[in-house]
Length: 192
Image (cartoon, rainbow, N blue to C red; front, side, top):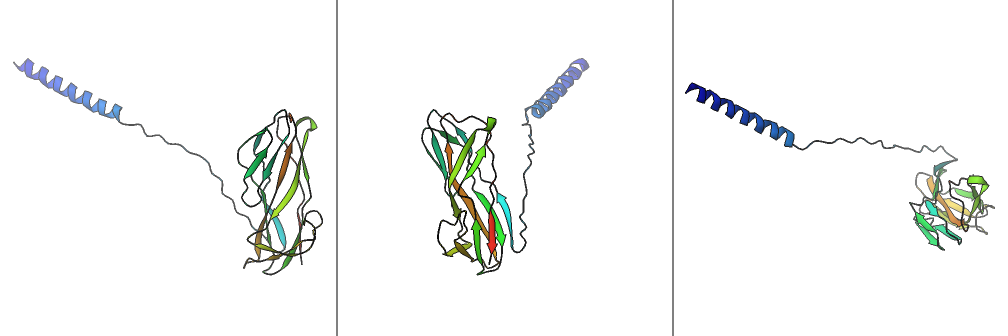
């Protein structure tokens, strides 16, 4: 009879052990993911100009016919003409400067920019536009303010720090060669 009690105790112990192991094995696994993020700050000294963001038209699939990607200088949104396919986010070029409140500034930005890709293939960025709100107000001058710097702006921010944007229209050729296209362009500010 003692054998039966001992066997019953062993079976009860095994059942409890199986239940405990089943509970541990059935518990949801905890996952941990680690990603890296960027931190950034822009330090602007008086009477200077600093590049904050580069001009980027996203990814484009060229087709047998030409097309364009035009970026809105205020929102950064892009619109496409022609049969090309556009993906990704557009980013206008952005710059920061610092003068004094009510100081006058003039900008010089080229009328067009050429970007070069694989094998020397090129694309033209034209219809360059400046976005100056809300830190700068147009106060006079003629021309488009690009290339010749004839348009004058007043710094309206209380701190004298201002931001402005540059956007334009990318002209994509028929069957444009695939690859990364790069180029640079000068931006000059004249404090008065």
